[in-house]
Structures are given as C-alpha cells and as structure tokens.
Image 1 (spheres, rainbow, N blue to C red):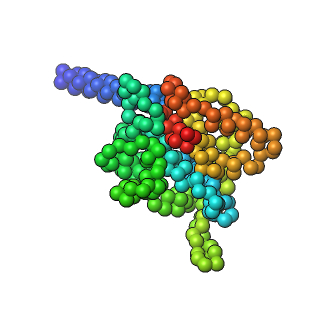
Image 2: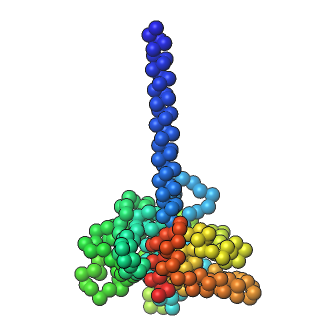
Image 3: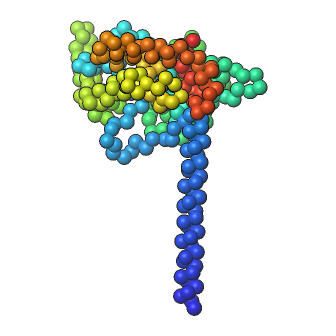
Length: 293
C-alpha cells in the first residue's frame, strides 16, 4: 500500500513539474509576443558558438566605414561619430532597454519626447551598458537628439560633459579584433604613430555588404515595416554616418542607380507617420527623425 502511495505521489509530482514547465513556456512566449508587438527583439545570446559572427549595429556601421587595408575611417568623415551614438540608442531600443515617454493626450512629436530607461539589465556589451547607465542615472530625462549630442560630447554645458562616451571607434574596433574580423597594427604618419585595424576576415564584411545590397535590390519589399528592423536601421544609420556609399561602390551603374533610388524612398518617409503604424519601434523612428529633420 505504501509503495502504491509513493508511486502515485511521484506521478502527481511529475505532472505538477510538467504543468509548471508548460506554464513557464507560455509566459516566455507571451513576453516574446509583447516585445514583437512593440517592435523589439528578444535578447540575442552571443555566448555560444555561432556559424556567423554576430555584430552590433555600431560594429556594422564602423566596419562599412573602415578602409580594408589601411584599417581606419576616412579623415574627412565627420558624421560617423554621431551616427554611432544613434546606433546605440536604436540597439538599446530594439533590445527592450529604452523607450520613449508615453504620448499623452496631446501627442508630442518624436523629437519632443524624452527617452526613458525601461530595463537596466546588462546587455553584454560594454559600450551599450555605459550608455544605458548614463540614460538611467540622469536626473532629468533628455530627448533622442539631446542624447546623441551628449554621448558625442557635443554640448556647451560643462556639467554634462561627463556623459560623453570616449574612444568609441577604437573600442568598437577592438571588439571586432576580438571577434576575429580585424587585426591591430601600428602605422607611422610622419609626425605621429597611429593604431590601425586592417581587415583580416573579408568574408564577414562581404556578407555585410551583400546583406545591405540585397535589401534594396533582390530582396526589396517596398514597405519598411516588412523589412527586418535591424537591417532597416543599418541602412538609415549607414547613410547618416556617410558610409552607405561604400556598400554600393562595387555595384554596376544600373544597380547602383536603383539602390540609391530606393534608399531615397526610405529617406523621404515621414518618421512621425511611420512610428504610429503597428509592429513598429518608436526609438528607431525617433533616431531617424533626428538625422533627417
């Protein structure tokens, strides 16, 4: 009789554990569906081995801007600094760490709404976590435009200079060195030595270039909301950082003209209207508005 009781209690216990597991899976699925409805993506687990090296938006934009052999960006490019800060805001928005304040009864424009910290959970990326810490700890919330300027150090307020993220390009390049995409060298420029990061894994950069090209050519869908949000953000920010041209340079003339025509179609979109559509990400469109206003 005792053994029967033990078996029956064990069966009940296993059933209870099974029901808990099912309930946990349903809750997890529900959270993912809510994130998708807000235009967010679940956190990517970069700890395991991957067939394809995963890059952040900042790393992809920098990689497009780096000269393969020389290992540095153009000295004449003064747009990439703010572009990389825009990448950080969108990356944090897509990962569910940041959001814009609610619209309220009288709907504010994207550029008038403050950026709020939705979650301070670590992202696993030092630069992203540093930006998130600044945004979380600021006494008064700031707008997207203000945060791009503050993180870039472009402010006249000496009390806010500590928000600047320093050596961003060098730190991103070191991330790419760790991921096996770049290497580190020293080059002499007459009066000074400079650390450079030439390309070592051309396959990864070629995949990135091909992905950008296909998005506006073979895989063009003529609807930004049917495009992958990360890829859409990459096109906008690569253009804002003045590095998109590098992805289109290998194209023949007809393909180049078509690609640029479709990029112009994206740039002519109205961020305010696009942000009100379903399954969108407001942070993405707020950053786009900041660069295209």
